[in-house]
Image (cartoon, rainbow, N blue to C red):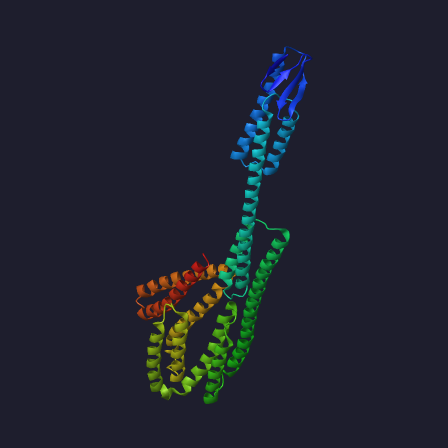
Length: 409
């Protein structure tokens, strides 16, 4: 019979291990000496020691899940409890018990961490929902739309919550986005409808203006033209593709009438000459508004100038296109600035802004070439007229470029 502190082999070849509960049968050994039997089962014990050590290291140094760790612990514990090894099995039980505590502690830490992450994600999503609901009421269509798209990207980067909570928050978030889109669509639809109404109203004004153009009832007809002009301004802007054509017809009809009246009242040339001087001063005052930097202030100032302009009366026929052209250049600059402001909030206008910029640049280049040609021909008067038109076109181009930059283009 052979023995060591943790086990023995009896004369029949049965191997025992000593435990706190007494000796337990390890197995039977018939292949060699008792010493070889003990050595074999001691090696099995050392193998368990190594496996437990490796598991301890994995638990401490890797992200091994608590579930997998517990499975590994249970497997090793079954081997220890099977008593198929000779050594200090109680020490192995103790180490496995400590490992269970470590795993349980790690499990609690991870559970707490997941709970914290979930709370943080919930709070983050609630904050996104609140902001989206606030943005849904905004009239800053471009900025609010971009911010809502940014919030969607942020939402996608956050962890999911439990299904019920996540669905409820997403429903509110999605509803806010839909509400904003619906309001924005309605806003631009209303704006389009207003411009269509303006077009129809101006079509009627043009028809009446053209019908009055050959009237010789100077006083009442002139008064009616002033009323038509007031109605024109009150009608608002039509679509861009119609506005210029309508204005040219409207103003052309008035020009025909007032030209005829001017011929009939040739004796009033002196008064009209004085009127021209006053209107040139007003045109100069209006031109100082260019380039437009403060649209609201420019609009108010131009309205005041225009009211004084309308109160002055007519100027000599041959001088009218030049001086009115100067005022119309400023008026167009203000209208284009208003158009740019509207276009800046219109998410579909970027391409049109780029096209307008190209057209204006071409117009500026063309005017520059015409000025050079006029000066080369010694036509100073024509060159000066073209230069004044160039100032207005350049102002429009500067505004168009600024608007394009606001689109990020």
